[in-house]
Length: 392
Ligand code: OSB
Ligand code: MG
Image (cartoon, rainbow, N blue to C red):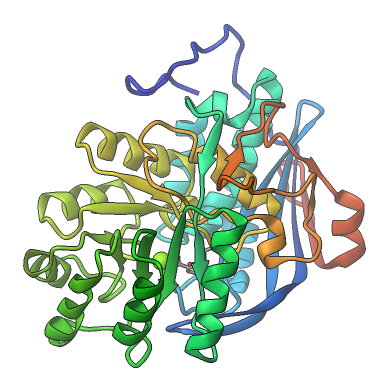
């Protein structure tokens, strides 16, 4: 990997990072959720997990494509990502040895969009590279934290009582910040009640694009509750109306869906569309863009935090590494595996300590063991690409 900006603390060892990728595999595994998860765009009760493994030099690296089954959070789906990886991205990755992250990113960027598909390959490559160097992922990218602070994202609940119960429960587990999913009809009143009961907690809301600028006055009522931030109130691709709304509100706006890469992040900051950015490696197309957004925000003193997509442990482990960078100054949406799944695909599973911290692993790569037997026993689909001629 080429040296990055001033935040890199670990000098690159004198080894070649060039890796010829000999094999790429795509697997899907359906993991039931412990309880349904509801946002302003719908409700799911299981997650079709999409895992990528890449092999080279006798080592394997793992990544996850965080796309959902339906194009609601973004236009990508598990199906579109399979197609784009199979027909375009995997051939580009295997066409010649990968010399470093920027080489891989440049090959993938030649294809428009499909950030989650691209990220799956970048993640797997970075795990492989870290293992080849004998480093943890956190070390590889210049992480500085031994443990990271985490919060929890609470979906829309069947009733206010149920929500209040959930808030109490997750606070008792130690989570340092509570994020409430909101939508019209499930917003001001529930936030008021949670705040009344917990005057001092870090509390935020996430609308997943459920409002328009015509709701400005309604949204301004949220300013009464001392929110840490209001995440993505308006359209998924909007910066202009968010800037207008931010100029009328005290609570910081945090953008999620709208930030699809470092260029958009830079424009959002220039336009004052937000004061906080949620970085999801999948949404922005992988480490190359996630690191660039981190560096940009760090240099401009804009807080960032790591968002989540109900990932399996593999995506979760990458999120932990990312959140160990110095600019991640707010708790991430990185819950314990058990918050979503009865059994995770990694060993050990991700745990949240009683003080709301998750340890950053020090072992090579992801720092967790991938439970391949469990994955294979439950795989719905497996596709394998081997050699430069990409036989299935
Ligand atoms: O907007 O942050 C979001 C889950 C799926 C899609 C979008 C979002 C979310 C979450 C859950 O809020 C975060 C997590 O715990 O993984
Ligand atoms: Mg969000």
